Image (cartoon, rainbow, N blue to C red; front, side, top):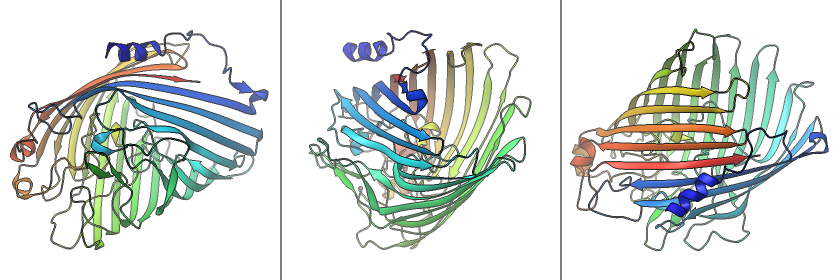
Length: 483
């Protein structure tokens, strides 16, 4: 463990604070290389079984490493191409390195993460086109995001058309694509040069528009469509543990509205509000990580809402910001009513919102929270040079105990929905997250955090010989070098 910690802390130690302009930019900026290396030492205890009496494989200390290498070629102001490779490793872990199984990040040897061409020049013409393997990220990524905390993150093989009217302060995207899935489904199948492929049975399309005509806020509206014709792929390890990492069979329509205040316009106050409504049909719940036996498509109706507000004391030392937030999303009211009301989280970046231990998703949950952030140091000349700290406190309830408690991937359940679960109290527990970020150099960042979870009545009412009701702990130190 000491060796791993030394690697993490030293990864950013040999870069001077005052570096010249990007040394990887060539040919007057027409050819640009980019490199990123991220190392995260991670410690976790009880976050899967909540049981102090059992030392499971998921109670572990290990190192996550992610290396990215990209190349931008921009021969003219109208054409841009980009290619990016990525290599991810889970080092010195007790679990099999199979993606998603028991929360494993897994290994993925050097792979093609992005490869796209973009045509357009928005300063001269309001429309641009982007085709190829790319990130899709909208709003604050509650429904569509890159999920960058995850070692693999997320991309799509997609086509995106962008329209922008600068004068009217309006933009709109239309896109269609297929999510790129990790190839390795077993403990020995994720090596070599078999690049990840898009899931052609999982189509995702949408229209997302935004405007800043109201100077005090950004207003965004969206319509999203997902048609997943099966529940594959299925990932499994040598011990027979299985998981489906990309949700259930579904044909779902989602409409939503998002309002967010413009920074600096409300004399220290800020706010955000987002609501989404879904309808369509889906394959019902996953039971022990498998879809329902008959494969029946159920009518689907669901909704979700988030609201947050805060105040920043701009004239105080350390510029403190105090914020409150409330998140809610519906769960399925009954296993036997031939409909599904469990909100489907699509392709989110859930790590940022529902506790950093990744125990919850925007699905069958009530989550009121409060947070405080301070910035003890902010360089006036170099804005990137800073030190900040934040504490978040969450309390979690199930929207209904007739449905499951879903982890951050919105697929894996904490406990089976049996008689004990449907009779249990809906209070899951509370979590505190302490986070510190430090950027000593332009191209280097250090992030450290510790989280603790206090078990609630739901865990106590559903505990068994192996599934306990004890608290859980999570900690990490992460360094990122980006050029």
